[in-house]
Amino acid sequence: MKREIITTKDGSKTLYIPGIYEHYHSNHGALQESMHVFIKSGWEEIRKDEVNVLEIGFGTGLNAIITLIAAKNENKKVNYVGLEAFPVTKEEVDLLKYEDLEGIENVKSEFYKMHSTEWDVPNKIIDSFSLNKVQQKMEDFIPKKEHFDLIYFDAFGPRAQPFMWTDEVLSKMYGALSTNGVFVTYCAKGDVRRSLISLGFEVEKIPGPPGKREMLRARKK
Ligand SMILES: C[S@@+](CC[C@H](N)C(=O)[O-])C[C@H]1O[C@@H](n2cnc3c(N)ncnc32)[C@H](O)[C@@H]1O
Image (cartoon, rainbow, N blue to C red; front, side, top):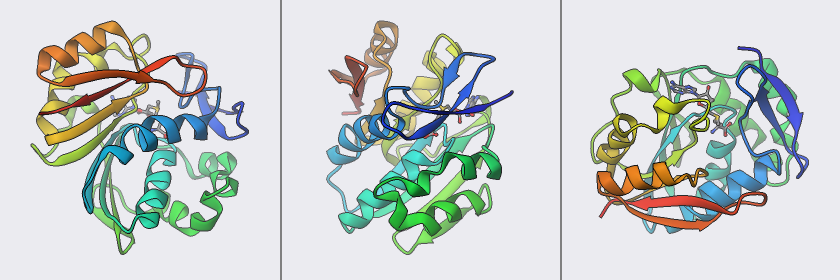
């Protein structure tokens, strides 16, 4: 499917798929959204020195690189699994210019390494950060059970990709999460919130990133 590069309101770029009218990040600010939804509302909730993270929709690698930065600053170890069915191309990574963004300019080589490393095996990006990019569709993905402390659920929205928000997929996420694990998503839809509750999650509606009133954070108790 054709993808275009666009610049969002905070100056950071993202990808847009005209065929399904979906952006990879909010057009109010890609970096701003990722920082708010995944770092501030997810990462900062985890009180462990070694964190197992699962990202659904690895995409541009923006969430992975800002997690590496946070982990480095806090001296934490991260084992990161990024599920992605349709990887971005090297040309797209170059055009996104994430390495020029404040904070990311200091981890430029790590960012490029994330994209150039082999798929489907864990790779050491730095000593304290390993990345396993799994090239697979969610439909076929079998995550390790009770393993992840944190899930970044960054699929396309329910309108474009209803399957990703079904009980079938969300219960896979519940099974993959460890006790006290945290699941975050930019989505605040009532249907999704109700599904998460019916699957056993404790769900909070919390303030969303700029341009979005609310988002969801769910915990496995
Ligand atoms: C909203 S974008 C994710 C943005 C990404 N987290 C980032 O920071 O760039 C959704 C991602 O899900 C991926 N995707 C779409 N359908 C999928 C599927 N069935 N299984 C796994 N990944 C899928 C897309 O290719 C895209 O990278």
